[in-house]
View 1 (cartoon, one colour):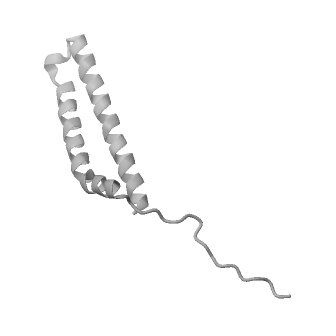
View 2 (view 1 turned 60 degrees about the vertical axis):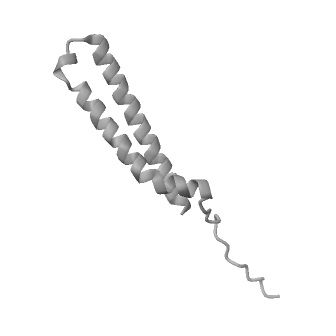
Length: 86
């Protein structure tokens, strides 16, 4: 008796973007650009010599930079996630 030939199936069906995800993906480049600009502005504020000796302002500026970096990283992660679905 001959073995049955099996149909090769993809290991994971390629998912397509939903309408909402497609809209989000379309605007992702603009959102990343805005987040990068925000991060640059916050880094410039952190590097301002006027706050170097003002501990609370320096701490607040540092926290702002960290939050902006996290937001940018989240956008890049989401962009990669959406890119995989395309």
